[in-house]
Length: 70
Image (cartoon, rainbow, N blue to C red; front, top):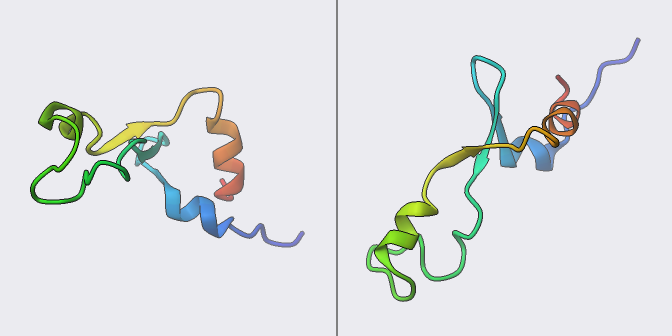
């Protein structure tokens, strides 16, 4: 039986936790200088809300795990 290859784009975008959950970066971070030290557009509340990792939706977990080779 040949080995499965990990999808390289998926491995850059998703992480597996120790308990098996799939995590991804919060959407909506790119526009509005979310990474800048001083926000140029949008409120501070918006920048805080878009920070960090969130769980992948339950409907997508099976597909993401398959692409990760799990």
